[in-house]
Every structure is written in structure tokens, then in C-alpha cells.
Length: 210
Image 1 (cartoon, rainbow, N blue to C red):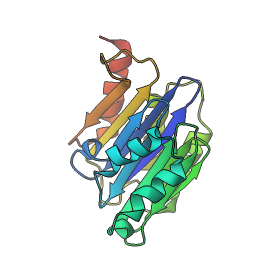
Image 2: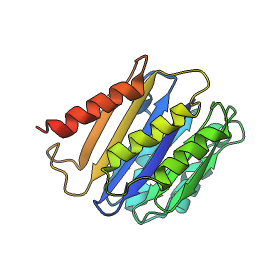
Image 3: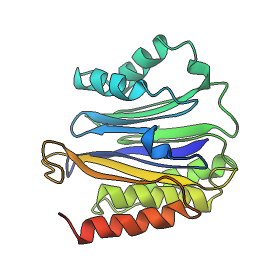
Image 4: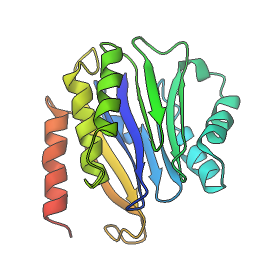
């Protein structure tokens, strides 16, 4: 019921997730990230426990593939799950269960994974991946994540429509929130044009830091 990107920018020590969906408050359920550790998105019939369990496995040195295997091995509902992971070394892993609502699929590469379900078609995934791989690596990760989401929506997005969107970025050395590595945690929970609103909030965040 969602499309998302999980990616990292080792240049700035940033790991993050961008997500959009025709579902209320997708940002409260899908993304997890920790700088130099990794990031993940859990969606479709979301298993929220994958977020803390996945980050814990990544902190303990497991690769993206090993983390994915550990999450799925104990989950009897894995056929209905969709997961994307990028580890602290930029390795990526992807899972789309056979029971995910079509169109469901994804692609991955060095430092990123793109995934979605209940999409208008494979062209959504292709547009997102092309936007990531063809993007400006000097741009802040949060802006690049939003650009990827916008490309997915323009290509068709969630076949039910729009409702929510979010960006979560953790960066090495971030002092935005005391005691945390979270640099960006912006959510649009219910909006007619959530990606437009998310872009407005993102601009405000960069223009007016605390």
C-alpha cells in the first residue's frame, strides 16, 4: 500500500528513508534509520517489530542480507511483507512476499533499495530507481529522497491515490535533536498533496534550524 526508498550518503554519514502512501500516517510505521548503522522500510502488511529488530541486527554488525534473513526467519506472515534495507557499509537487501498486493516489486543497488506495493505498475519502481541513480550526489539526502518519491508519484504511484508521506534521515554528528542522530523526521499524515506539503516542510527545516 506504499512506495519507498531506503538509501545512504556515506559522504555525509547519512542514512534515510522516504515513503509515500494512500494510507494514514505511513511515516509512523514504515521507516527506521541510524547513522553509520543502516536504514530500513517495512511495509505491505507491516510488521512494526522489524524496525527495532532490524536496527539491532545492523548495530551488531549483520549485513543487509543477514538482517533480512533474521527478520523473515521468525515471521510466519513473511509472504505478506515487503522490506528494504541498507546497511552501514552501503549493502542493500530487498524482499517482496508473494502475497503482497500487485503491482508489488522493487530494485536495489549499492547504497539504495526502492520498493512498493499496490502500485500502478513497474514503471513506478523504474522511475524511482532512475531518479536516485541519476541524481546529484552533492544534494542533501533528504532532498534526494523527496525527489525519488515525486518521481514515483509522477509515474503513477499508489494506484489508490495519495494521503501521507514522510522522510527520516539520521546523520553522523547531527545536533538537531539533543542526544539523537536524527537530522530530519518530517511527516505529512493526511493531505490531498502530501509530497507537496512534505517539500514545503523540508524547505522550512533547512531554512530555519533551531
